[in-house]
Image (tube, rainbow, N blue to C red; front, side):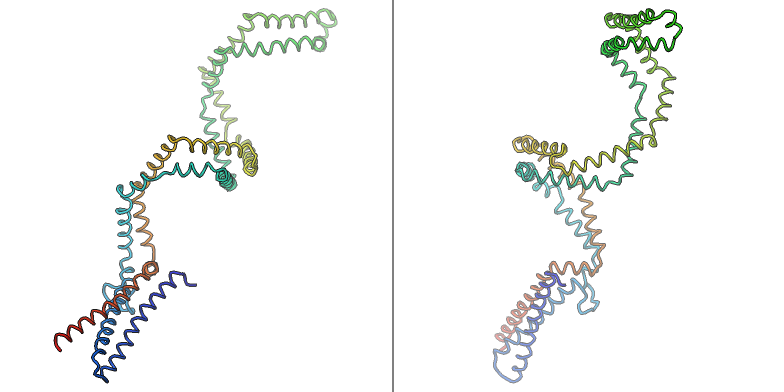
Length: 413
């Protein structure tokens, strides 16, 4: 089915050709009457139609020679577009680059950009915000759904393994222990645990005596309940002493043990080797893969569900931030200026950076077309207007012929 451009081109060609045929008919009729009649005015009409045919044929040849060989005859310097296709592509690319993408040409347009103002007026409308959030959720959901699960899991496993194996656990553990010592976390932990241990010991005296009798029946048989009671009471008293005496030797011993452990972990080759062995055993892609599989599956399922719910934490978070950004952008002239300056700088930089690529794209695109394809494309775009050249050539040629004939009659009659 013909396109509107093809229909228009055909109509204009038919009009120009019909005008030529009209001149031909007038010429034949006037030629006949010139031979049969002595009426002088027929000569003027005859001269007009004859010159009009010459003008029509000349301009038909000129227009046709741009797009194809006239009547299939390989006349030199015809079918110009097809024969010069590559040159046209290169010249067109260079023309666009030099005349449209130069610094002085693009700067006035880029300087007029006011993206921030337009965005601030658009995004402050609630309907637009809801549309933005909805479309953002759709895009994010499509990305998440289309992600190849196995590739994502493998990538996460590789990166997680690299990150975890790259950690210096010696320094991390030593630093953690130093933090415990510097902030008295060991004392705080002990102060938290001792009351609980004491309370448990007081409630569990009978259980402790039973365990002593089970493990040491001879002591229970010889000493009876008295020693068992004194033993459990001694444990409780000892715990109370540690709790009440902030300088108790047990507290100091615990602090010294932590200090020693910190120094050993940070400086001991044995600890370094041991930690590396543990890393090789527990931190590998194979060991991490089951946890990553579960984590990714759970994350993907929960996140997709959150994207589908209007009141999900994700949707509420996104809505809150969009509203906050809209309010700030609408009222903050300084922020608008910063955004506009960033957009202008980015656009200016990108255009100048890629102007050579634009030239190459145009040249390669035109070079990739078949010659007749390019001719057809250009004829559809400008062929309609070129038919008026044929029409004008017909009329102007006729008028020139009429003038010449008239002058000839005036001079030589």
